[in-house]
Image 1: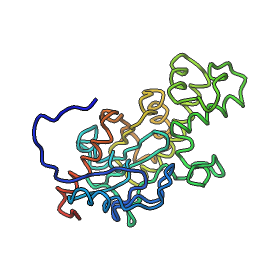
Image 2: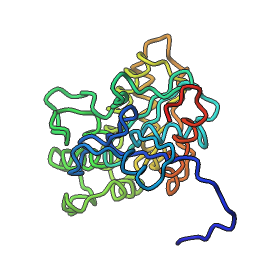
Image 3: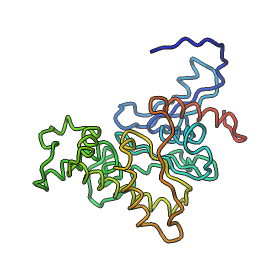
Image 4: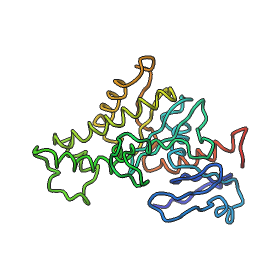
Length: 270
């Protein structure tokens, strides 16, 4: 529902978080699931508002939103993991978002976790997001159903109608296949995060997105398998915590934090 703004405000800038958003170039480059090719979004927006405009990957924007408004207010080193249709990540080191030399750093969803594994939308095989995401857990359920005779309320659900929410509800009801799917998902993600800790030594890892709302069904195995696979010097030091961003407002808060961060940065390009 639209709400009328009762006070007057001055627009200082525009932040945009979008798939394959390139912070350095202001472009959206070959986004998955969108037939856009490469689009210079900064130029397009500035045709309508001649203001500072900043673009980045949506998971990067979520990380800045978490640092400004959410669970990472007190952290200078953390990883934001978004568990939705795919898996996105934003990496903050010493209070600064990591962009890399080309603007695309932090694509943890596309690290290879299974050699010759599941086919990913990026065209490669075995990417993390094909296992640890809403679509990934649906694929896991169908593999478990085909390899097991265990009774499950999910057996009569066509793949095209299966959702992570339905798997969650089945798991809460004690469905063994659904619970195995969550544990397997947590195992794959936990081991991948143990590797990430070795590179970055974060204070915390923040999980955000629909799959993260499954609570202990996700957090318990992720924490267990990450901890079991950590180098000894990291054990007991890295927290895995839920996002504190309201799910319905996370996108706009992330975009707002992006432009706020840029306008208040001593190295701002805008």
